[in-house]
Image (tube, rainbow, N blue to C red; front, side):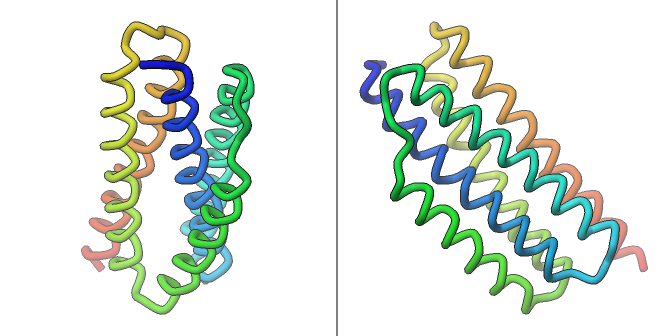
Length: 148
């Protein structure tokens, strides 16, 4: 994969991760359950690390993190977070699972196209594993909530 195409793909992830930061931050502010509130805030911090890591990689490759991705990702995350605040927690967690699964699918596809780039591949794997852990927590919390 050419450097230009890698930067383009990384900018997609930059936008996606910005969306997730603002989504989980907004969800954290809109729940009264202290444990879920703190978990969403923690996940948001992890997603912010992804934003920073992806931005650094874009710059390292000679690109510029997209301003549009920053604005659109953040805005769509906030809007989705506010809209999901109107639903019950189980449905909110199910939506989060779908978003994490989409991110994981995109990460897997990108990883397969840059397998020979060890540094980039390692960065993508790290983010993919975090997304999978978030998804697992959401499933676990759904099971817990449904048992009550």
